Length: 357
Ligand SMILES: [Zn+2]
Ligand SMILES: [Zn+2]
Ligand SMILES: [Zn+2]
Image (cartoon, rainbow, N blue to C red; front, side):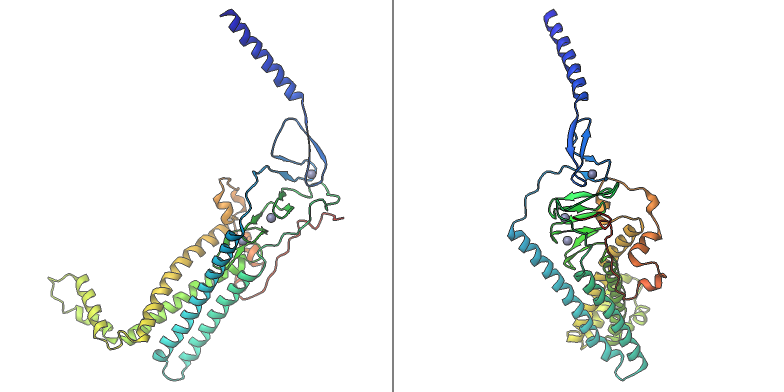
């Protein structure tokens, strides 16, 4: 027993001795940003450079995507974009064809007004869709590895190194493997626009959602109103229900009256009636789904977060919350100007202060 305890003491003293030696040991590591040699008191896979502020973060190497999976992702994005365009075309053409001749049989002020509303809503929806889909989501100034010259103090504050792009990545940028590039203020990769949503196209994306919701609500109201003109017997339900005996539940009476009115109509299976049913169902479904997405987007933007930020467990301080976050995306002018189809570009200036050889 004595020998055993003596052994434990020797082990303890040996452990303490090795800990002291470890504390004395220093680790020389090179900063990827300014290439200076740093002295760390102990081994650390993640550290921040005291001179340029660049972060070195260890990440396990990820397997490269196969050509097949990249092809499938591209195909999926193009298919979704085609579906979005087909839905926009079907709702606009179907709406004009099914509703306009019923509501405005002759040229009138109403026809001019609603044609103007249709053109304005369609133009804004397509304009914002095209720009959110085609502009570069958030270009980050590219500097190749080894080309960085003198980096001033704090010149790479919060930057990490993107292994895919082989270039410094600003704190708020993320690498999108589908777009194969780093995206400034990346929110998410949206298959419906076939592009990332980032600093450069966030405004167009939100306006696209907003005009989609407004357009669909307009189509829903116009579709319902046209439906009442096509099936006038539905209007008489209110009058008929007053004569329903008290023993019959009101819900049952209402359902059977609507059904009877629809079946009674010679237009039940006409193509115009089917188009109206499609318009009303599609417009309310799309405006609900897109409206929820719009609410989430504006809410996150107001609180100074991106969708990717909201997924991480790291919580940001709330003092960033406010209208300034909306102005950062929409511009400093009056909110009325935010809704107009104005082309606004963003440029990353975070790497301009670094000299390049
Ligand atoms: Zn450095
Ligand atoms: Zn990258
Ligand atoms: Zn992307």
